[in-house]
Image (cartoon, rainbow, N blue to C red):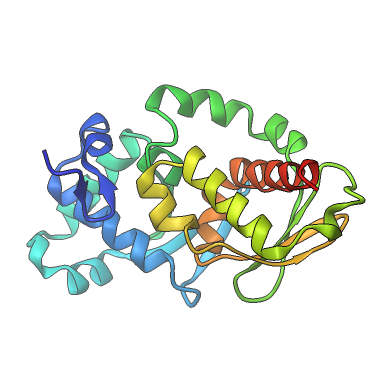
Length: 222
């Protein structure tokens, strides 16, 4: 069996019972939503991105489907808990993608429990503060006095090793492989990331935990 279909692990696609048209549409949405110029709204801490059926048909004529068939695909993806959506106008909708589920970071049985614990989990994780462009400030759980003694290159190496261990190969390659450390302080670390919105809205809890764990590992080795 071929390991990957587009950027997704085929084993995960089979577990989610996705067909090729659903997979192609998801691939398109992931790429389209990564643009910083698209229209979006936040609802319950999740970023929903705007898309129209016409845009999909114009960009993906290979699908050879009409608006009714596109609606059926979206319904199927929502039923499989891969996306959430709400309509603004007919055939105009906002869509949120569960990148954790799609990348194999969690199973379908995890989704309902994670939804219930969103508020509780957010209290346990360090805060995330937006900078300009693709920079993130990850604030530590607690002050780390010796953090400034850590060399940027060293933390970056440890962080990427930990990310590669905790994330699936697909998720690592797609979203976090190009993470770079720009600044280290006693209270926070500044990172440069390629997929800022996906990290914030898909799996930032585990991402932040890995960052903090990596800082602590480096401090212990000083």
